[in-house]
Length: 82
Image 1 (cartoon, rainbow, N blue to C red):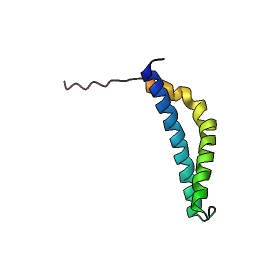
Image 2: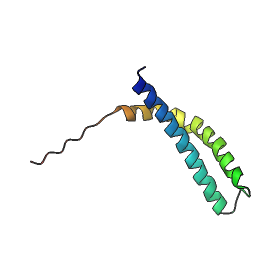
Image 3: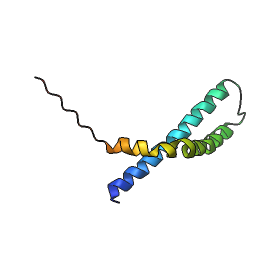
Image 4: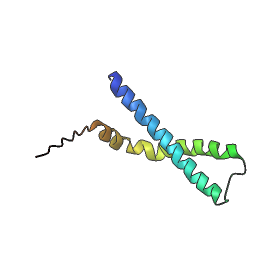
């Protein structure tokens, strides 16, 4: 595996993991705004990290092939004014 392929794989996994955390944190913030959970501030962050990792494992990894296929397709658009 070349360095660029390793880097793209690392970047993709990092993106999916941080996105999973962000999605869960947004859902928990919405629940907090509704007054449903989290009296402590640190509890929301810790829960978001744990559920984000679970979300990454359940949702992110099964869709990894599609994400890799999407990043490997390089489409060049040419605009010509005729």
